[in-house]
Amino acid sequence: MSVLMLVCLGRTAKAESYFPYPIVPDSVATFQGRCNYLADHFWDFCEMSKAFSAKQKMADELKVFLSVMANAETSKGVEGVRKLMKKLEKQPKDQLFMATVAEGHLFGDTADVWIDELYLPFAEAIAENKRISKAEKARFVNQAEVLKRSLVGKPVSSVPYTLRDGSHGDLQNDSAEVLIVFFNDPDCSDCNMARLRLDADISMNELINEGVAKVVAISLCDADDEWRKAVERFPGTWRVGASPDADLAIDLRAGTPDFYIIGRNGIIRYKHLEIDQVLDVARQLKKR
Image (cartoon, rainbow, N blue to C red; front, side, top):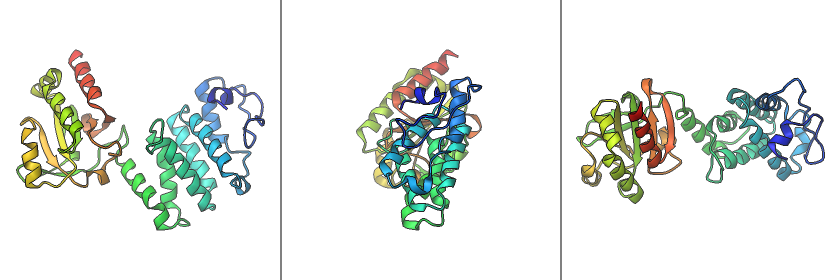
């Protein structure tokens, strides 16, 4: 069932669903308002203790639920996920199953779109459930820790790195009106192409010279002699460092090259940008 059909229902739906969906009151007129209502009531008529006898059907229903949550207010969607996971707290295997399905839709390589705010409460619920073994929850614990430190709209986390001269820096201490963070691997051809394009971009260089923008390039490797030789090609105007464990401190699941843009007060404005998007941001800033 499509999201539009579901939120526009004026009666309980049975034919195409595993369990009856709730009736959205006619007094809730807006599309987002109806999604907000379903965020709170989607699972009202689902008998959780019996429902997982047909796991694929529950997986299908979770997909419908997530499509609705993506259209609700963020806070309502997050609360909807937390309410669902709370219902499953004493059914650890089923809770783990639902979190794994959500991972595929919202976080992993198979996701159509990454929605960190919606996925985080799934990972947190698994991480906090004492009925789930440490081995089974390990990746969810790591995901929750990294995501909490990497949400758009939140302060950037501590990402220590070693500079070319052997001194040390930390991303959370770097500041600029617009801070471009370029996570890279010197042996990655796409990273080298992104570096060349960023270095050659007229708008970006003007922003750097005007003191508006600053580039911090962090390589995901050890700060050894091989790395120092590789980064000799990086511009002198950039702050260049190495941090082999950066992916444990900040969300880098997109691989390299990966760009973050951090605004005033260390707030993450954008994450997982490609070089074309970064250069477009530079052009837009020059038009202001």
